[in-house]
Length: 202
Image 1 (tube, helix red, strand yellow):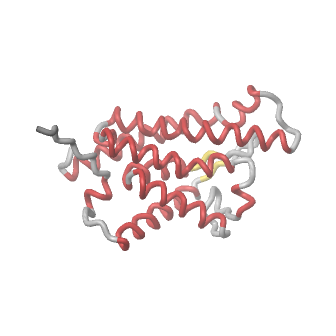
Image 2 (cartoon, one colour):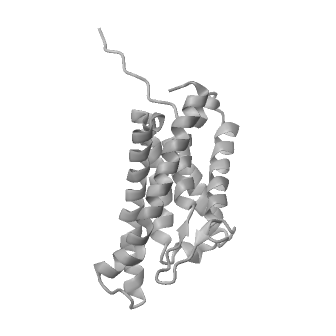
Image 3 (spheres, helix red, strand yellow):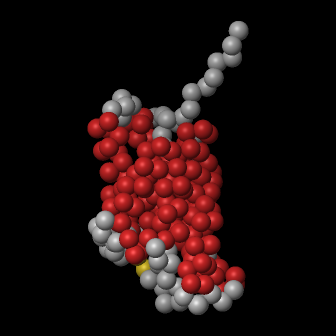
């Protein structure tokens, strides 16, 4: 007798719209990319680093959790394509391929990966149903952004002759953003379980 295999957890969007169609998937992908673009307009430049504080990370992590791994990844890939085509979807209303190739390019290119990771954690473990689980998923998604973004920033600084060591790199691309990332992770950890509670689907 075969053991029954438990079904993966459905993310929020797929619970609200369970019937899978091409039009549904395209609508969710585009809606997710527009949501990230909207939050990207919340941008605070810092005088000592080319990396600004933005709402992008909150947007992409929420999109990954709400859409799941596949659609979350594709939504952020669509976001990058929109930006590469020159649409003003990046931080502060910027766009263009040069932005992706610039100092923050590693963080941007990691967006689909981080969204996919958060979506996978939701689908496999249902982490978005609780505050601690959502917080963990958000922090892991943020960690992936840094794992890709910081080496890219270091390589860019080396290319322009401004790399001043790991301490300076962390001061430019890591330490100033940790408090904001924690606030955004907590906010997401409040929003997603509350949405499930409202749906009665914990």
